[in-house]
Image (cartoon, rainbow, N blue to C red; front, side, top):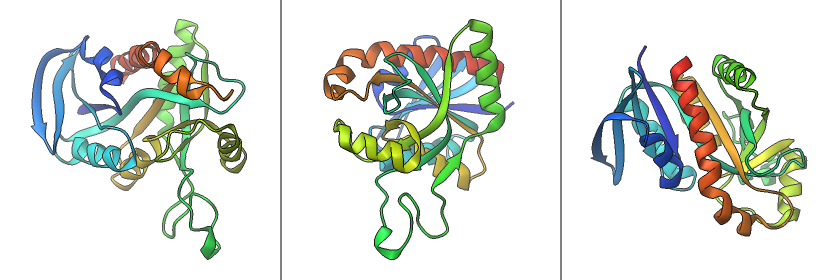
Amino acid sequence: MGTIAILGAMREEIEPLLSHMDNIKEVNYANNIFYEASFKGKDVVVAYSKIGKVFSSLTATLLIEKFGCDTLLFSGVAGAISSDLKIGDLVIADGLCQHDLDITAFGHPHGYVPEGEVCIPTDVRLREIAKDIAKAKGIELKEGIIATGDQFVACSDRKNWVKETFNAHALEMEGASVAVVCNALNIPFFILRAISDTADGSADIDFDTFLDSSAKISAGFILEMVERI
């Protein structure tokens, strides 16, 4: 078994992970901090990328190329755009798309660029491990498309557009860019999000209120994943 990367976007998303780690060593690189550690005998590297697609692409690439990680798990929060999701719910991505990628002027669909794909699937085996954990713990785990963009979407009209255009369940700002990196480098990856805000027009209020609690829910589940991999 190689080294497992655990990535979040914000410090709040990785702090609940680090509190359970042993033998933590901080590595400062590329204007960021990477935490080499162990968890129940497994070698892990934990990092938060900072918000957005560019930073998450950079950090995911470094976790793979510099730190030699051969599996990547993403833990964090997201906004719901499906009415089936409520605050605190866990959703795993079966695919990820970029809702703000738009060259439709050239006749292409939203989210597509030549030699790319609109929706990148996550690793089937990792999703099955997650479902087994959820079943054993009696946790309801939702599964669907997660849409990524470099904007915090609080507008209900935009949320509805993303939902209809991509058949998406949740919105965030890093998952699809991590998917592009892992897909290109043949690294199995898994994206887990706990819902921190909902589609009812109060996203900006909900996010600040529920960030910490939702991040802890996601982190706890990711640690279970590390044990099973």
